[in-house]
Length: 303
Length: 304
Image 1 (cartoon, rainbow over the protein chains, first blue to last red):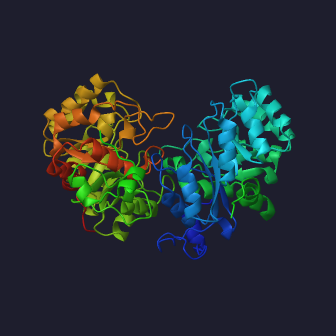
Image 2 (spheres, rainbow over the protein chains, first blue to last red):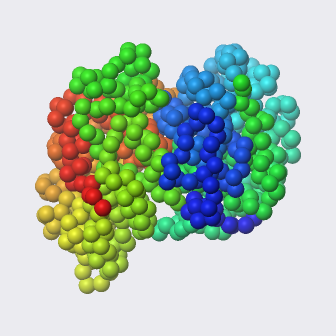
Image 3 (cartoon, chains in turn orange, cyan):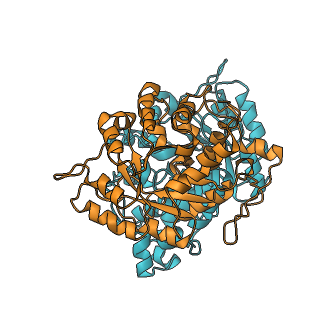
């Protein structure tokens, strides 16, 4: 994988057009900010974004970032600890065609499967479940079974140890028609990516219903101080993206910004641009899957 | 604390400016597509970051400020970034909107002269670590350079303890005409400092040239999990703002959003609204100082 760096400045110098005319009603980028989707790509889907009325930022912030970066759609993923999904549903309604909805429920409650069924009726396409979670009562896999029965996809949070456990592998195997989307490159979330542990996570690729999300470079590499431009991270990069690609292939990879946490790191557009540049040598078709089609398939935006 | 959620305010139909005068918050308008908040006084955000290679570009910041009804602020360079050109570009692109707090490598002897050059271009402040010392014959050269250039100094060492040195107090005392702004509750920032240490740092208020920057409650409070409403923090909120007020008074306090670093916490609007709400027992004149006048005075927006 090359380390070619694609920054906004280099794009500006290269004369990339803004190309942000995504359609009537979308926010237009200010003239001074001429960033467009990397290489003018269309159909980009952000597979991991958060909005909230009490934490993080409101949906308007996300819409602004998406529009400036040329991202057409996003998957709203409920953040840890929040089981009130009303704001997400409201955001989906207010911006029709732009968002898929991945909800969360209080999994520890016996009624969690029924609650999930109600949310699915309202239009949720996925549910976020910690990889280590087991339901109370007689069936520890009840919530996973409910997700499968409701034809949802599961966005799984967790650590490399959670994902790499035999127990999690058995759950993935038990529900072969349920898409399991491993978040944050398998828990490579922090400046020290545990490569050996991640390799065990990536062995989950043997299950065809296992998918994986990748995010910005800062999720697995450290920023240099003093700041280095145009690429502010330590190089060579840990081989996380190469390992993910080798294990899962483009059709089971999806990029997600992790906005707004990423705003406190390299920022939305760089989370896309820097990561996109790492796939420069892949085919346009591969990039189309990684940065859009896979997410659009697993987490479809409902009409 | 009378924290009000956006939803509750929407339901109650609270007005914006009038609500503030009554000690309530116009939070509803802050986080929706509704018109931006209009405050009864001008808000000044003393601590905001923007960059092309890290954090977010200025356009993201402008959008947040507009939604929250914040017309002006000071760009504060992030640590490790000694290239201040983007901030100067932003200052020029949005004339009259931003003060400019630059950052230099204070260990280098040439940094003092560099500060004069930055001041000549419109910088109003410099950001320094309290432990930085200049190589060569004068370890305080960068501090003196800031003073000579007429810059205010925004100080952050990552922890409260970084301010608890006799040497830092000596620097403050040595430059009585220079304003020293202790960022992020004097370092009580994402580290849940012991209140005794916070109190010791706030004792720097004995020097009349010190000021305190306060941010969102999320800088020193833990988020409740599961999420709680209307205020998503573990109660009680540590009394850090009360302590800051007691030590410095309103005319030496200034609010800063810390955007976009606050985006992974309560976000821009809430970093303003909930902090304003926490201080709602203070008079509107005092709040005007804390959320506007002090910052605007210490870090003035210069025409370039």
